[in-house]
Length: 508
Image (cartoon, rainbow, N blue to C red; front, side, top):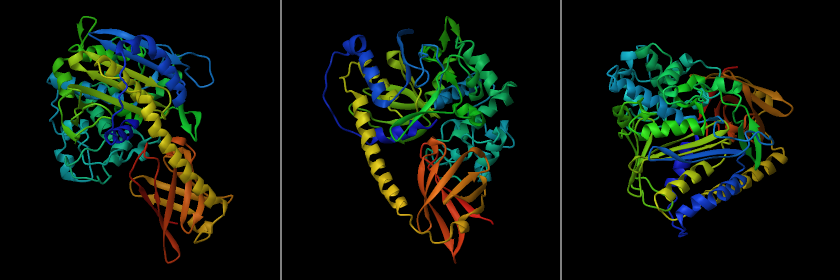
């Protein structure tokens, strides 16, 4: 659900040209294996699956590496990866299918189907449509609320309740902001219309008819699967296995696990007017609805070649690239990043699945294959992206070294450590507790029982917080103090999870 936006921001700001012409067919036939294996080593990717479909057929499908770092079980074409926000296209297509079947309208008010739907502004809650949920235009900042929901113990109903309490950063329909909880809400419309849960609808109307026999709708199902990848991340240059994300309270936004074989069926159907194995599965009208622009992201841009706009349909980014319309999305959740790309005019589909959340190979490889089939010059995207990554890592390492040097001097805090300890509350998130333990402050959250923050003094009222779960990152945090009393703490987590800070007020 996450990586898609962070990479988009990087790429649209990087416009330069390197000329490295090559025979494109030769890259696919002779150079692909070496490219992938070398790049996997560069990016510390344990396992990867890729597929290209063209003209209704699989023309390339390969899997590399291992399911778990240090293990011997090989990734094969049926190995499951969590696909993150590539789930959104399934949800949007499902709702569009119901629209095509006249069982609902995308322009129905959300409250037509969910009378208890609430938002911070009652007028917006009354006026918001199902379409608004599926194209990220409710007014929330990108990822807003996700720390509260992500890997938490909140139920789906509680996520919806807290979503209704969050004050959006922008005006209704005024600005695009990637909103996972909105997709979850759209998924909740499905049982109101059909009597089937979102997961049941996925299995009965999409997975089974498309022969996606290995795919799982819910994140709670993947631990019991046999042929599956483990989740990994990279911290300070080292690869670690991490737990699977607990995503079922946001399931329609990012909980599906699938294989490259199953995803090839999905791509062939979407490129073939909804047909699979001679049967009509998805109405063409529904496919068209997901590819109709609803939100404007910007002018677009590409590292090397021409690209002129970037829009959002329903569950898909819509871009122009080298004179073609691109229908694509990426997905990032705990330990996985994936890419799904369609070029409808070329009847071309590209799928890349990886089992670490800290690589840009999944997009580099998609771009490499896309350029190859469009007859564009070889660019070595992996090397270019790796340059960005290494530059960023160097800067982060330098900043971390400065922080560690400061920590080593044991700077004095403005107040005693015990003064910062106590009970805190955020009006939407809920409770947070801070205790003094062995010269540090340990921050624990009401709804994240398996995660805590360890805060070391940086001097004054500033602390350096390292979260126990790597995806939440490391952040400088500062307490607000008035009249020598702690008033509040502004909590931030890694941008991968959420950009928006949380102000917790000290209550005792």
